[in-house]
Amino acid sequence: MFTIRKRHASGTTAKEADHQPRVAVGEEGGVLGCAFSGNWTTRTVTLVDAEMRKIEKRSGFQTLALDLSHIEKMDTAGAWLIDRLVSAFEKKGVEIRLQGESEIASILLGAVGDAVRREPDSGGTKPPNIIIRALEAVGRRVYEMRDDFLAAMNILGATIRGSQMKLGRGHAVNPAAIFNQIDRMGVGAIPVVVLMSAIVGAIVAQQGAYQLSYFGADISVVDLVGVLILRELGVLMTAIMIAGRSGSAIT
Image (cartoon, rainbow, N blue to C red; front, side, top):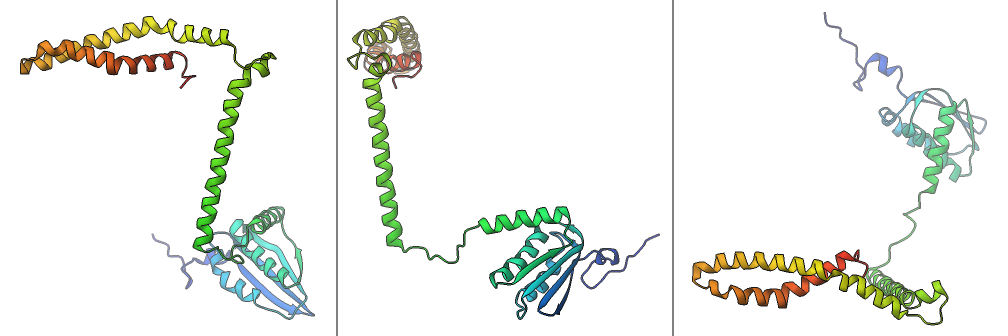
């Protein structure tokens, strides 16, 4: 058995219509009263947005009294709509009175109001023209280059004077420490560099002889290995091995 629920013109059911947001407006003695009821949530505030905008345009009263005691549900969208109404009349110098708000409604209105008032007013300032923006970009790049230069000089100065600042010695560079590092990074790296160069040279010789044999030039593999290792790969591998072995501290 199917049950067909009666729907209103807006497409909502009768049960949903009972919880739609509503605003009852009345004016007496220079006081404009607005009583809110229903669910003021993201899904329903569009139903009263136009009515709220009409209220914001009203004038001729000194006090705005808002009754929130009959609001059943509220989220940030509903709080923003009410805060927009409050802000519109605060700018006109109208006194605002809130009554009947629940603890949740009070927290939401306060949070939304603080967030809205922290947003900068982008409509009052005109962006500069393209010439000003171009000059501003150039000036900013110059300042960045200056900062980079000062940082590089700071690093260079700390490198030269670091030992004196830490050890309190009268000279900036310690020759004994330099030779110690050369021994550890250079002389100590000879075995592993020789081993890797020999392995790479053997692989290049084997693969080179195999490929050159198709052209009858396998005898030239000796010259290939000699030139490649001594002129190209040897220097490159030595630099890579020393830098990697020392933790890339000198690269």
